[in-house]
Length: 139
Image (cartoon, rainbow, N blue to C red):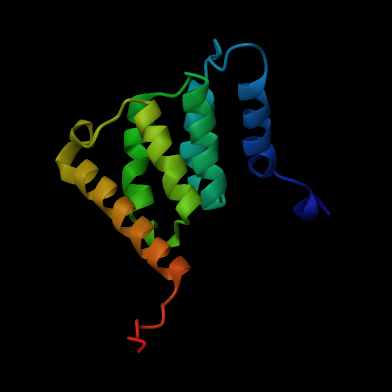
């Protein structure tokens, strides 16, 4: 059935990764405005990690609009608890690569966004280390 057929969003991340890796330079002369509009319209249909990587690849290729990335900050903030460590690293690299700083995002949302990313990363890191047995003095 058509419901089982792969949807464009299912292959987009792999496609853009391949495109970014093609040629001697990652920067591409592409007009991705239509793609960013489509992504905004379909943002809720994506697996969160795939959406993050799609945007990472767009930034790597130099064809991502800063306003588009700023627009996504509230979306990511609502989903901070669902982010994995790798998602947080890719988001950080995406916004750094686009040269978007916390002050560039209006209404104090940038400060909250980067703080929340750091806090979630620390929480996940602490969970991955697990609880250590308390130190005991021997002898």
